[in-house]
Length: 549
Image 1 (tube, rainbow, N blue to C red):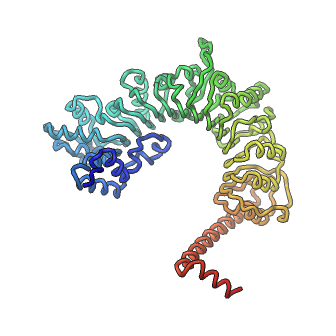
Image 2: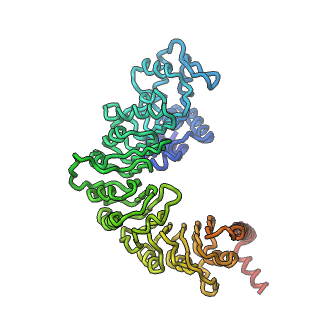
Image 3: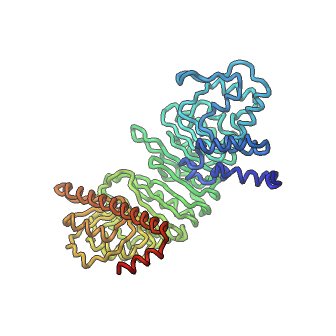
């Protein structure tokens, strides 16, 4: 054996390639919670690690660490105990009967300490008394003492035993009333010493209360916080006192804050007199919902904080049920005026999203806002207005937009009235936004399609959502889109009437057919190139060209 393998760091680095994601820890929760980092091993990786552990005693511990890194079933762990009696069917729970020998208990502890991530399923196969006995035999309150990441669905009454002080990532959701109550009991006690002191990433989906939110905001090391209130039948909204945001001790470490559509900031309590300006120096992602029906509370928050590293801002707007007044227009103008100052113009994503699928444009007409009212907030790559915030989009507005943010990759524009733009706007966008990949826009003016005035740009747009007030001949539009955006993969056409729906379906079918033909053509070209290279390469191609021409 080479002497380099005697160095633990080198050996661990080599074995890590059999499980390349595990040794990175859970440093990216947005990827981890999606299942990339926190997932069971594939059969191929598990077999490789088992063979490595059996190859040499020196490899054993390192290979087992990776083999047991993440678990979604603790049955293999409990099978280390001869007293473990697995359930014969799902209706029954597994038990521990008889005496547990000390050597088996020691082996159980050593393997339990290897587990870093655990996905608690909806129905745990273990009887609560089995877990209680193990904890009593091991003389500790936690079943997995080295656990770093825990994913929970429908928490059971033994949730405390799976939250050790080493836990850094917790994603918990409770759909039923019982599981939500269990989750609330834990969160209500989260200000006590039992809470993991180094908890950095927290995602909660449950029937939260204001007291739960208050306890969560007391965590000191939070980096990512995502809270989602389950929709109640009666439409209950969790209104959070605005002053709580200034009481968060993790304001200096928080990088991502997401509050679901049923959690909204309310006006601060009467006893709150305001604080000095607070700087969230690490916050990069902010996704929150405005109060209904005004943005005034959000302005109160923005006037008292600095978000100097903010890059991603999403404002979710609840449904508007009445006409907005002049005061609301002043609040929106103030919002746009303050935004560049507090973000230091570092934004790359700015989105205004409607909670409901449809907002009545007539209620927004009194705002009378234009794109020119939105100042320079940074080098935007994604700008989406999915609410009728803008009165009307004209050619001058579009020129302002492309000159302000020429690096856009995603653009969605919603307005009170369908824009004054015509199909020439698509050509203008294609020429001035070369990086655009997603576009949603409405065209209100009719234009005669003259292909001589539309250049063949071969733009790389992938997703197009087009709303048309005056419908041109579908076949002409088909040819135009094929010239401008030959790489389209997703396309949605909405027209003012339903009489032409069948024709527009034909356009979508034609685009789909053309896409298939282009893919087949590229495959044929690639196969032909491989054939030529295998028969002598470019020299033969050159000789063949000399004969033909």
